[in-house]
Length: 129
Image (cartoon, rainbow, N blue to C red; front, side, top):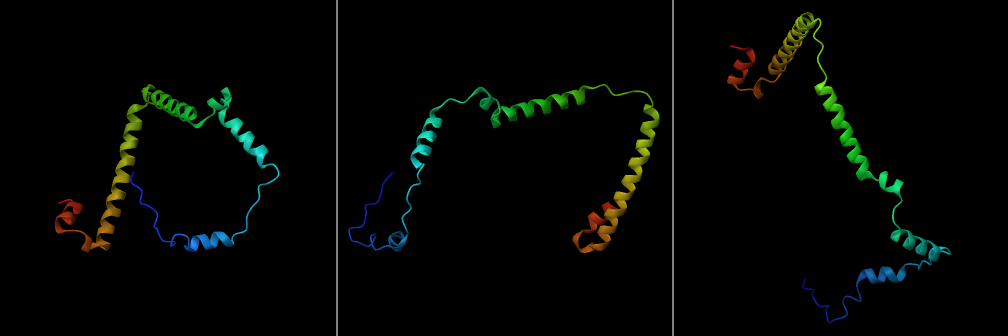
């Protein structure tokens, strides 16, 4: 990577940022700064314990995905009950026909409210000719 050389004049020293930094009050380190820094350095190099590795987000995500796949597999592969199949099929067809009629009515009423948004071909398809 090519770096541009610093300007030869003193314009970078008279920058407004340097003026703001000169006005800022210096902050001193707290009394336990050294202890905290040494503790953080020791913990950074320490190996994780077994329970920390087990409860980290990556294994938990894999466990959740595996559990979801197992549940979906069990639900998809479970046998469908065959008793009362004729009566439940007839009632579900009737319920679907009612829902279908309601949906068609709502679509037609929305089309009537917004006739400018539909072409003639689309309106004919909605009516069902």
